[in-house]
Structures are given as structure tokens and as C-alpha cells.
Amino acid sequence: MKEILYFLQQLCVNNNREWFNYNRTLYKRQKEEFETIVTRLIANVSEFDSSVSQLTVKDCTYRINRDTRFSNDKTPYKTHFGAFIAPGGKKACTSGYYLHIEPDNSIIAGGVHMPPSDVLLKLRTAIFENATEFISIIENPEFKKIFSTLDGDKLTAAPRGFSKNFEHIDLLKFKSYTFACKVSDDFIENSDVEAFVVNRFKIMKDFNSFMNRALLG
Image 1 (cartoon, rainbow, N blue to C red):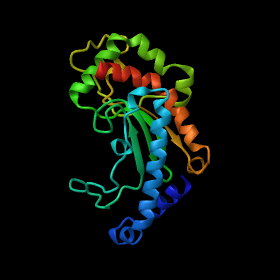
Image 2: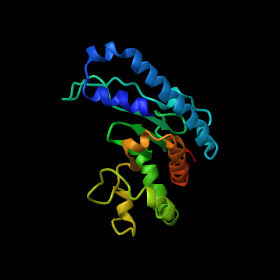
Image 3: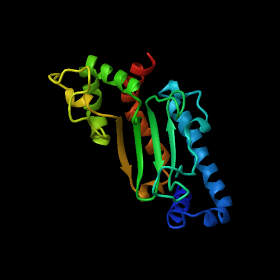
Image 4: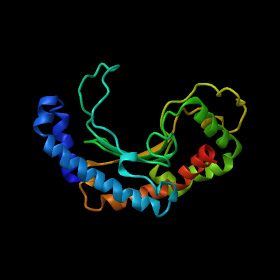
């Protein structure tokens, strides 16, 4: 991924259409390389999570163009490559495995990010009804060593429909259910990085399975 990271570093300081168009061939080459990596990741994840085995790279990757219509930041391009490997693909609102390559901000992550209210209710209900199982997953020493805490915004009070006296009410206050670990640029350039990513995804498997059991039955 070294060349991918180098391209993104250049894009960070040249985020304009003139530079991008001049370097479009370079972009296409790095995009194709990233898609090749994602294809391998799908195959490797499928070995321990068959729910993603039918995915294609297009199901999991994103356009580099930013939607600037409602943003004060008018730079036209994202400065990262990302892939979300989840049952049904990136638009399905299921729990999955996320790889984000960005200079000084690369992460390996997973879960469900900012789901709509009906999906969030299903997740909260599953955690409420199966709190012991959920806690055993996220407190598993191997998991906790890599993915230490749930990320994201929380409600200040108990969500509607759940008692504030529930022993684990703080777990129900999250608006997203995601975990992430940061990866240094030096490691992204390491030849063993794909195996490292797959290993981290494998550690997240039980968490994603719990989430998707609630969402998919």
C-alpha cells in the first residue's frame, strides 16, 4: 500500500481539479491497486465470515469525489481510500469490517456507523436482551487489547423505551456501535499489512456476528 499512501499524501496538498486531472492516470493506477487489495480482503474474510462471500469490490468501495453541497469545505476529493466489507454491501446498513487508508489517519474498524433509528433500536434491544453475551464479546481480552472502547456520540439520558435503571444503560446510549484501531503510516507501508488487517478483522468477527444477528435474524 506504499504507493497508495504516497498518492494520497500528494492529494492532501494538491486537492484541486487541475492537479487531479493532470494525475488522473496515477489515481486510476492506485485505485485499481486498492480494489485488488479489497478483493483479496473479501476472499480472506469470507473464510471466517461467509456472510460477505458474495460481495464484489464495487459493493464495498467508495467514490473519491466529495459531496460538497452542504459543506463549508469545498475541496473536491476525499484524501482517503476506504472499503466497508459487510453483508449486503456498504449501503445495506449492516455491521461489517472497515479499512481506511489516509495519511496520518489510517484505521481498521468495524460495526455500524450512525444507523437510522429503526436499526439503532434493533441493536439496542439486542444488547438489552443479551447484555451478558455482548459484554463478554467486547471485554474479551484479545478483542479489548485491539479495540479498546466503543467510539462515537452518546445520548445523555437513557434512550426512549429503556429504563434508566438498567444495569448496563450506558451501552444503550451510543448512537453508533463501532470500534477502531489506528495504524501508522509506517505500518501501512509494511509488506505484511494485509495479513495484519485480516487478523484484526477476524478478531472483530464475533462482534459483527452479534450485531448482524440482531439486524438480519
